[in-house]
Image (cartoon, rainbow, N blue to C red; front, side, top):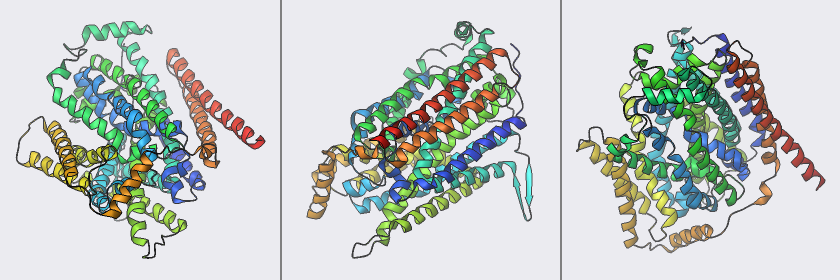
Length: 593
């Protein structure tokens, strides 16, 4: 089968532009959903569990699965299955333990947990350590995303002169991406994040269901997919389809699984999703759906990338100058197997995956700064906090400032390459040490108010020592994760030997654990205002996406590609129609009741 890499054309660019305009429009429209700060940062606790679950799933997905994970799969084969389905076990732990605990914490911002369980000083400490690296992380996401998008669109060498300033195509793409992100996140708050994430889920799903079977059709030269699988088995490199790498690199897989358990239960954006639904039963259903999606859907990205190893054995010659051509494996499949228009949809899917991670982090960072810092400093000695209008305005301004800083950081990444390397290692340096006390803090009740500060500091110090004084060539990630988690856990447990003495602190912690033992549900929020309207909004937009895909299926291509594309588009449109029908039916029941 003759495979030719296509060039992006006007139709592809039009699809990407339409997607960005859709995000912007949704954010502006959802401004009406935000009457209070609770609406802006937790959706008023009214977000339907399935919308929150889809948002949580794709927020943990990011563009990494299409790029970094694709590169790992292309090189290492079946071992990727163990890595990239591991989120399922993290969410399973959430289903059993943490989903309910986050919901029962009754929070309005993620780090409020630190204040309730430990102390206000702990919140300030974590905020101080988290904000700057988090902005760097956001900048890194924007930079890496736009570097890829600009290359795919062929605008890297393009320049725009704005008087004394000349911008490259890469810089323009970062500014446009940052602007879109600012508009819909600062306007629509968490409602905009979760609703656009739901739409992004369907876009990603459509692209994945297109590329996966087409990869094996190309591999076997027949629509009998078993022929493609047989060729993969016959021509894959030795050991590629086995799990030998899991046994030869056990510490890497152990460290990755450990970080997965921590990241999918203690990360601030995960907690934010769990406490933003009406009931604790909803939070468990969220975790269960995310676990199921994380166990099944990664095969849609892993399988075609493994096929690409046989289809494109020499990606380096196809992407000259790219230091990591293996990371272009999935995109190469799209550029060869899909017609123009659907290539634009693929670029939109990758853009969607990255934007999901960016907008999620932007929202929870703003919630931390407003709820845990701004309100505390603006509250008078008499205990009078700033009113809702002031907090909501400050929230939007904070989201804008954070977005501008992230975009500016992205622009500087292309100049300060060393910062790029620092940002890549950020999670293994900071995440395990700082989030381990969060996980343990839910479970262990006898540690004092200062235990999280001491434990996380000990973990950070040992990780610093591991990086500066010792050499773990090829194993630095594993060393950072295991040392950070091990030392942070040990020190946290040891602090129980020094019981808390402050009566006021003991009472605050006691009240927190009383809440942990008390079911948290508010059924009245399930069908109130925004919650019900979200069904209609997601339904209409999903149906619109499906209709666009049906139209793209008419673009000249092989008959089977026509049929597959139109079928997927029609199925998506039908799902959207079902959501709007459910909204109308439920509205009628409520009005008649």
